[in-house]
Length: 338
Image 1 (spheres, rainbow, N blue to C red):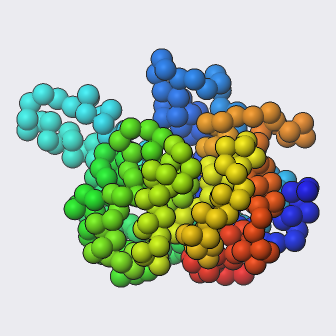
Image 2: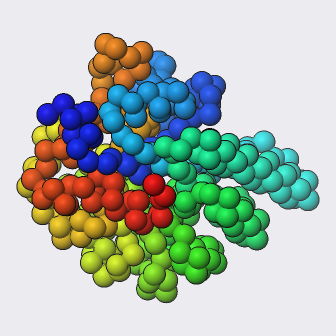
Image 3: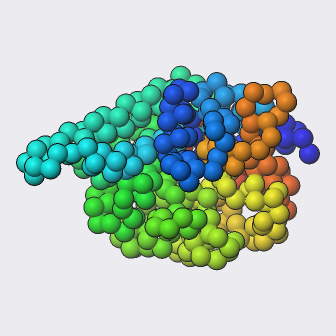
């Protein structure tokens, strides 16, 4: 099936993309965070830039009608690296540390403002803003969320592992309390493809205290062995808490690659509840991490995104289930207007 034939037949909303502010921002992301140091294994230069023009070109090529931009702060790595620049004197170090936190917090807020303005100026985009509960002062963090949600952001994204904490850290309880009270979705990565990552099991204590927290797990767990490990942890939470959801970024291309049997994935999604699963591509980070051949008509490549859509189009779902996962679920969950 041609991808455009599929996306003409059903509304596809990409619940999980990443967009870079500029080419320089992409270079920083690629070399400093994704492929860092002597152990880097990727191409010399990013195979995709992921700026607004490329996001819009990807959507035109694939027929995706709406995309949700997740603001990834990478602030924890900035903060940890910044520790090496602090003076040794305790008083001076404390002052310099406070200044470092403030600089990083300002950067987070600045990028949030940029992604919000971009979404407001492009009707086919929405956004989740980024936070860092370690670097940001609690009051300032909640004020930042309140301001951006009031002005049009649809949720919050945080990579707690990058921040140096796990989801069961009690410093997060005021955040959870605020988000639950205001019905604001929180998206986080929970997986086991690297040591020390936040896992779904780390969220169990928080969900016991905040059972109506609208928690979206990127990649529906993404265990090493499908259906086990973090996949099983996510499934257990989803079956217990009706406000737990997940997106299919990273998972769908594995169907095309032969790593997951289509029937097995569909059975897993039905156990979760197909009304709580969203289509997502992870464009453009997925293409940076797993570059493939560039389509001849473009000067960048989108191989993983195309594979994910091909999987969604051909999974043995009912047409109602497919339409729900493709876009209806996310539209309903975050209150997207038409």
